[in-house]
Amino acid sequence: MNAQNEIAMPIHLLRVRKEGHKWFFVQLREVFYNPTGKPVKLKDRWLNYGLTKDKIRIELFRLKAGRDGHYLVDMREKKYYYCGLEYSQFKAKLLDLGIGRREPRS
Image 1 (cartoon, rainbow, N blue to C red):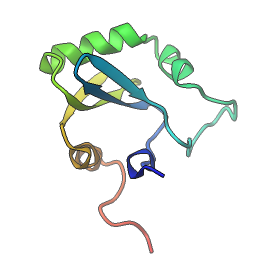
Image 2 (cartoon, helix red, strand yellow):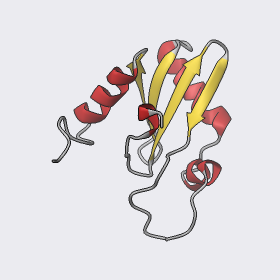
Image 3 (cartoon, rainbow, N blue to C red):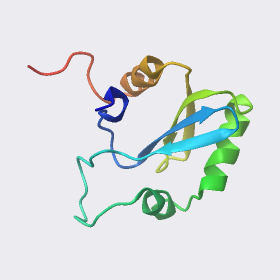
Image 4 (spheres, helix red, strand yellow):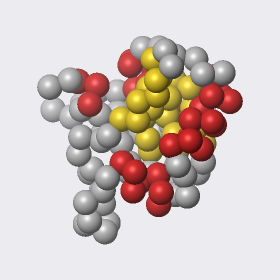
């Protein structure tokens, strides 16, 4: 399994990756907190916050002029972050925002 899909994030956060002319909206492998108990599809997640793929792409493009790399979207707060080209930079941004921990529990 790809380690880049193993990260756990709150449901209001969205990971987006840009390569060339394509934007990839990354689906969470598993939701760790879902108070409704209903299945959560990626499209439903952004619609719940009044967003669309186009709105998100526009905001991300404004952030770094469409630069390739990893982005983080806080859909609840409508905040957008450029994390960098490397996946490790994406993980570091989550830690900077207080999400996750540097060393896994043993």
